[in-house]
Image 1 (cartoon, one colour):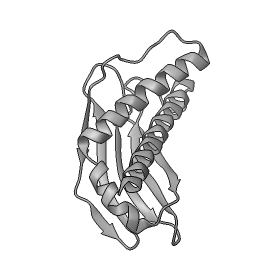
Image 2 (cartoon, one colour):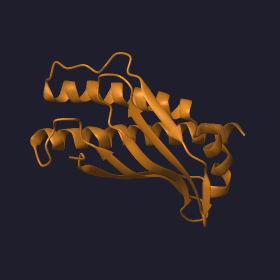
Image 3 (cartoon, helix red, strand yellow):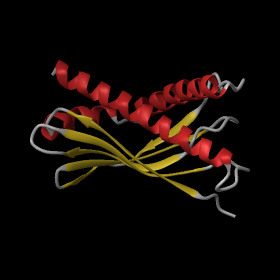
Length: 160
């Protein structure tokens, strides 16, 4: 039986015009950059979750993640990059298959979007308390990655 898919969609506003972001977006959306952000997000969000719920679990200290970044494609007022990540280690990091995009949102604002799917860890049944917790953790990891990537892109544009 194939694991149930979890719909993932989030965005971060960036107060810069689309044209100013395209070069920095293309520069930062690389397998290495995304991998580092996913690992950082996972460690941070699992530590926070453990603190909040009082669990003794800690994240895999050296998680291994494989990231695939596809060829960018343009849409009207958007640049879209397919991205996938999955854990290589025994520990579970939410696997993602999504489109990461920078989108024009008016003349002086853009959005950094992610739209895709993830799956629950093996052995976690749909509609369970554990599934709900894992979904919230996945969303937190994705949001963490988006904010970190938006910050890196904004800093790069500021240096230009």
